[in-house]
Length: 146
Image 1 (cartoon, rainbow, N blue to C red):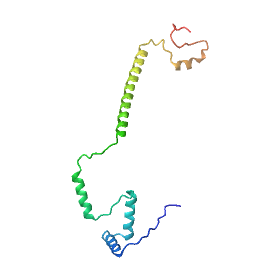
Image 2: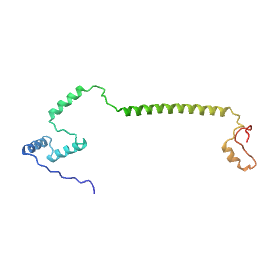
Image 3: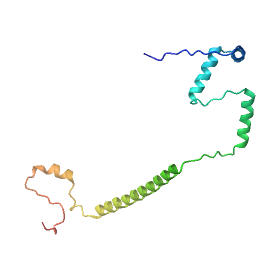
């Protein structure tokens, strides 16, 4: 059906109404735009909005900036720190395993390079030699017993 706007109506005293109209005139917007902005802000901040005059907001802003230290400090839950430490240990373990695997692969490559090429049978060669039905190949050394 789409997103339809809803109408909210409420009553305010004449003094409050005049004050709201003056605010709207100062900002050069309609009175309904003032309420829409307020409702949007209220919804965006989950109802945690305080209406205060501009001079109070400016004073509060300067007090906050002067009392805060740089860099800002944030409290982090212990569970987050523990999980972070666990992940760091796991990453270190995986790096060690990767290094061990690389050393093993390097060792196997050097062994392969040192082997006599006559002893090595490439699988691709087996596919090409299918015409020779009589040739039989055995994996392993000749000293193995069955």
